[in-house]
Image (tube, protein in one colour):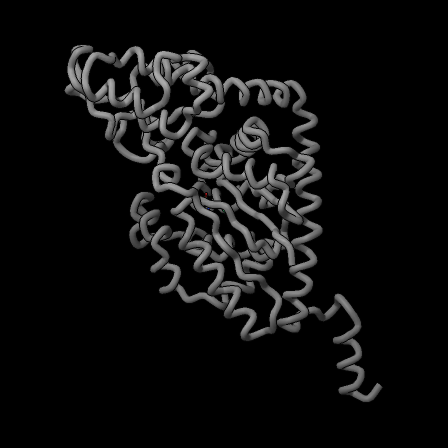
Length: 361
Ligand code: TRP
């Protein structure tokens, strides 16, 4: 069998450059390499509701934002099916049958779930829908028989749990489901892009993000307030590049071209770093450079986004077409799953023939 790629995001907010480095960039690369049979990206609204059930408007509002983020970074709707999770009912049905294959204690041991229970303050009042979302994620992945799942490091426990379900299902009911392989970013830094405050992972709740949809003014404002080296006070002072967010982001975004275009007096990042460490290079200069580098990337995104915002009917059609394609594949898998368990009573003549035989008519 060829390569089937599936991944997704919860529509709880706009996507930021951490998402781009950690996952979106990888998806665009996979798309452009073209070495796959099918490629699906899911807007996981049902999963997002498991811990936002009391704020459904937030999820509804962000569905379109996330789709626009995908399109703006260069996801090509002719190559990739973008779909909405809740509009693919087979996923919910699969989840219900997979629930039999997973114990509550196993779910509680899932490290991602465990830490989320803590950060959401659920303690002993865990909504059962939330506890079960790894099972629903296994349905997302297996419904498409995806063998390639590009995700961030934090999603590895989900893939592991998916594969436990795959193997348990196949051993009880017969070989139907496919083992999934996670594809994670190459370097730790790509998987864990820190926020502009330099403190922790970029995240909406910490208000330390640069969003893919930020205006040039917003990006500039954020770059100018970025955490650098608090001991680098005067231009002549030697400065630290470790933990300095300007250098962290340059590592992730800068290319040879950018030096030629915006800072020709340096050959590469190593030279720039050496000068900063020695002293004599000011924060404003490196921040202006970073801003130009980010704008180089983000202005492309903004252009595409504007096109789709001005043609929002097209975006609706993209979602509709992607969701139809998703339903087709997921329904086929559900059929196989039901047949394997033996709950395909009215879907073919097998059951009818069986009962006829049993009662001799
Ligand atoms: N759990 C993922 C996240 O929080 C989103 C997601 C839902 C997903 N279903 C998926 C990722 C299937 C990969 C495959 O980002």
